[in-house]
Every structure is written in structure tokens, then in C-alpha cells.
Length: 83
Image 1 (cartoon, rainbow, N blue to C red):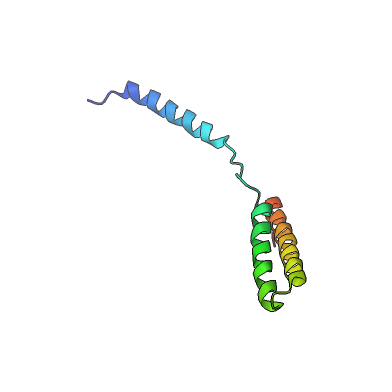
Image 2 (image 1 turned 45 degrees about the horizontal axis):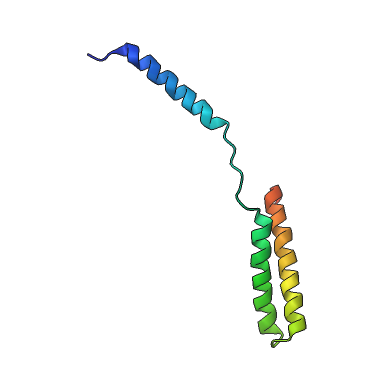
């Protein structure tokens, strides 16, 4: 026969485990702003390279603008204000 007196201990253990999991907060390993800044800079580099016929001034400007745009977009994601 099943022993019901063991079942109470098991249920209590499960309740404690569930409450322990509720208090856990997960922090991201990296900020989205940094990741999007790097991706934006790479995309800005590629677009400016192909559109400016390898003019170094326009490549630098495109890379900087892409990085700044990516950073601002990533910062909005970090704040949770994306629309």
C-alpha cells in the first residue's frame, strides 16, 4: 500500500522549490547597446564602402553613424522603450 505520510513531505518540498524559483532575476550578460553598436558599425562600414567607391572619409563617417545609430537602438532595447 502507498504510504500517505511520505506524500506530505514531498508536496512541501515541491512548494519550497517553486518559491525559490520565483525570486530569481536574470541579468543579461551583455548590454544590447554594445552589441547593436558593433553590428551597426559593421553595417555602416559595408554600406559606406560600397556606396562611396572606397573613399576613406565616407567610410569612416558611415561606420561612425552606423555605430551611433546601433548604440541608440540598443539603448532603447535595454530600457524597454522600443516602439
